[in-house]
Length: 155
Image 1 (cartoon, rainbow, N blue to C red):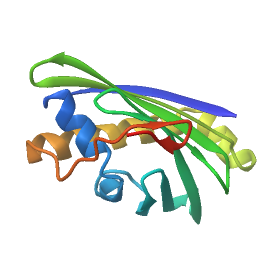
Image 2 (image 1 turned 30 degrees about the horizontal axis):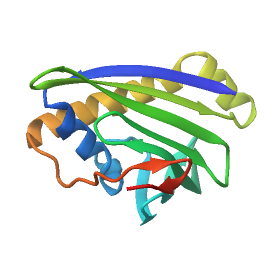
Image 3 (image 1 turned 180 degrees about the horizontal axis):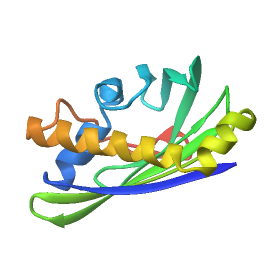
């Protein structure tokens, strides 16, 4: 198992950062290698991405979602991956985004790349592109303010 932890400060209100992050179908605009994310329903996503030079597809379930605070997920098929994105208000127009991702590596090449920090650099790059994206917009492209607990929409 590999683990990546990264954070970035963005110069938008925490609500704007959170609302934009919940627009999962926009991920290809700032996540390197992500071809598409399709929101199936309130708690399920279908991902298509290039990983290690290979096209991969998998479904993920949002396990926890709390407006302006947290989004957590886990893969329900394909290679195991899970993660949490936490949002922290730093000021009226500044927020910190903390990302933790855990995943299984597939083979020696991925394991070595992970050990050498390649995955951390990739997540860092994605966060920097998200920062640029959301700050240039100045507002979110949409919002979903529902709540999810244990994979079920509660509100």
